[in-house]
Image (cartoon, rainbow, N blue to C red; front, side, top):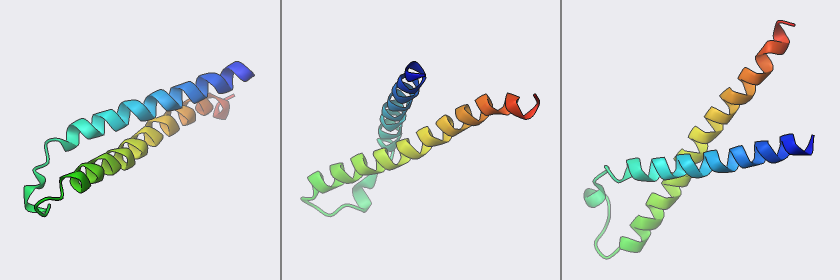
Length: 78
């Protein structure tokens, strides 16, 4: 039983890191020049990091929930 929780924790951690990285990469396509004031580079970078974490975590939670629900589905038919 402990191995199941360890596997689930590792899967969640890897999934979150992966999707945060993907969302950071995707946000690089946005041109924020019109939104950001001059001399506010650090704050803009911080905003990108926080947006990446928020988007990546939401997407990761979605996929982890789908995975969990699909593992529970056979119990419905037995």
